[in-house]
Image (cartoon, rainbow, N blue to C red; front, top):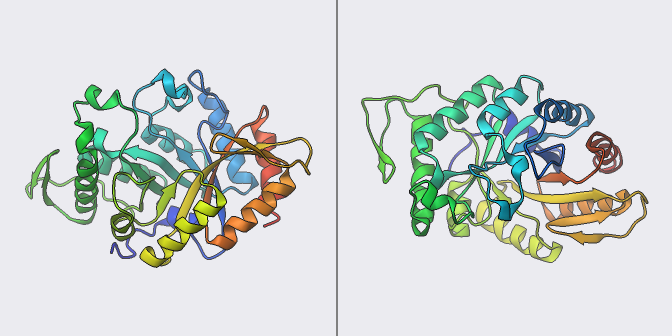
Length: 307
């Protein structure tokens, strides 16, 4: 088990004792077909904090593959979150999620610890094995070995954070105890949340993760996942990402979207109240709206505020 030395400010903000919390995911402007305007992204990040969201989540999209249609994820997570940290005060900063097999663990450890230090302990790391087939040959990585690479990088990153002059090796390389990697994070290790199955067993995720980040799931499926998770992982948090489009009619019934819903605020209020009762700890909201700031305010007042 990983102990409690991962519980930095960001982790405590997202997974404190007060029930279900909410974050929003970049690009906050909803831009998908081009690089978003960074000034607007930062303005919306500050707005999200001011209206009561607890987290801001940046995706890791190393290359643009038109099949995914998400050019809005153009900015690299580390400098984006560093920039956002300078324009916010206490909201947690998350990655959803860093693709470990495509990144060297020394770079991940150093970059993440830097963002954590610059934000005074607000960084929480979603980590993933990746799902874009052309990226593996682009990085010279064997896609069939991504599960092993994921595990090795988790071990290496934790050793780099926790130890001075660590001795650790893997297919990525070797640290023999004569080099250290600085800075160290604000806590012994940063919180790591495997995303999806990450090509691991649930038992492995429960033992080695500090929580579990998942995609949107049907309610019945989510309940079964949460029940199994509690049996294996105890009180470690469980988070999901869900798309939300607010209908003009507050009483509108839900319509299914890809990985989410369009509905009125009253339905969303009951939906998230149910998820909280099932044991969900955090929801990353992907807001779809022509006016993102207004949608954030409405969701914060009529859903978060009412819960």
